[in-house]
Image (cartoon, rainbow, N blue to C red; front, side, top):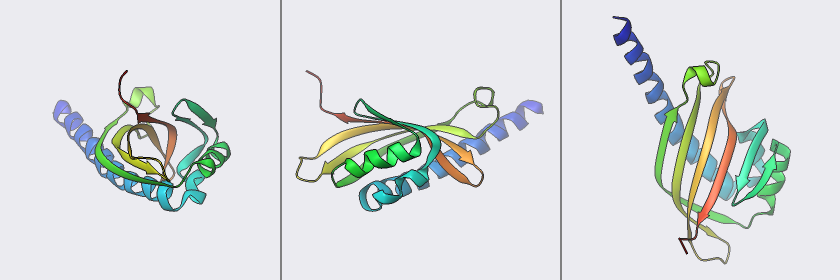
Length: 140
């Protein structure tokens, strides 16, 4: 019986993560492409951004970083999300999300991208703990 309850808890957590990830991706890329002035609201105060090897720490620095980027238009083609085990995050609902797709920056040809997020609950809001974005230029 305990195993069945554990399986149901895991299934519920996975379902929550998948639903949340889909909604979060829509919100995130809408902000990046159209509401960039509000990006800091999506990040924890101590969040980390790594963007094509460049970094920013803390939501104010991240906001400044996004402000410097050219206008963009993202198209998401794949999304995968999974919960982080409770032992690793002190039972705080946290998940890892991987996104890929294409992005067109103002006057730059469309490129493929890959992005990995760690998201955690903060009160009734989801916040980005870490965000790693990489343009896929192909292998040499």
